[in-house]
Amino acid sequence: MTRRTLMFTPTLAATAQTRPKPKVAVVMNVYFPNSHADVFVGRLLEGYRLNGVSHRPRLDTRTFFVDQFPKNDMAREQAVEYGVTVYPDAAAALRLGTAKLAVDGVAIIGEHGNYPRTPRGNIMYPRRRHFDEVTRVFEQDGRVAPIFHDKYFAYEWADAQHMYDRVWALKIPFFCGSSLPHTWRRPPLEFPRGGVELDEVMAVSFSDLEEHGYHAIELMQAMAERRKGGETGIESIRCVEGDAVWNLGGSKDLLDAALRHRANPGYGKECKQPQAIQVRYKDGLKGTILNLNGMTLDYLFAARDKAGRVHSSCFYIQLYVHNHWSFMVRAFEELVLTRKQAMPIERTLLSTGMTIFGLESRLKGQQWLATPQLSSIQYS
Image (cartoon, rainbow, N blue to C red; front, side, top):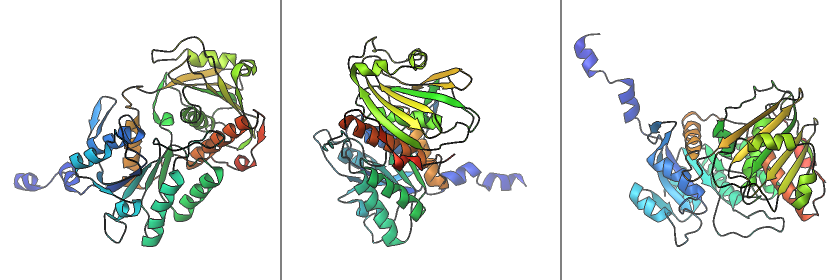
């Protein structure tokens, strides 16, 4: 290669910079400060800093559909600032106002907003409605695009199962669930897949059992699924509240190990209204999610293996900075760019079921409930 050829040959980096970014649409409940839409979409639009390195956006966010506009709405001003079009319905947002699907990816942020609760306590977020509107466009237009679906599938089991089945039927590249399995672990803790025999697992959370306890459920499942034999399904669940939580027995060593790793200030030594969801897996593994307001502002994990060793860590979130959401934005970018799923979506389906049937147990007097719906969910 001559010097002249070298001077006029574009570098790979320059070529990559001139290649058009994939276009994406965001379908969301609401967009206000510190909402899931804010901490996700803000990074999608502007980029993010992760582990000391700044990252510019790799996707071109073109359109919003927003279900609600409260007084502190950010969606309309952000749209003006970043040249995003706000459409009156999800279908128009996906088609960019044309007759056919015109985006390369979709983010569905179905969290927050003014919605009622079911009798069991699930917030009736319109996650299935958003999902159905998006996938209806896919079917009508004969093409699918990767979807990021924030947090759990739906507040009713039939809806969650419908959504899961539809992902596979339409062969949609799909990423879903909580941010907690993806965040920093202090100290580092990862079980080799299929390489650990576990006797008991525990996760600790705080705040509302449905909204925030869900994160502990999914982080626990992300660790439990790595046990020898993989995931075998769940046979029964119950929810316990009040002083009875302290009498469950057998897990104080795990709780003590987990609490030692608390990182955020502001917690105390007492929880006046403890809550627990107990899980019996088909292979004998025992699981407990403890919601301990007053004792932690962190998500914590502990496990005992069959040799009696205890493993524990804090799944660290920058509580007021929310930078752990950068992991979710990065994962969505990778999904759109590669069309490869980064995690088993069965994890989120099972975690959705644990939430629904745990709250159902609370409604029915804190009794053990058989969960045949969850017993056949097996993966590795």
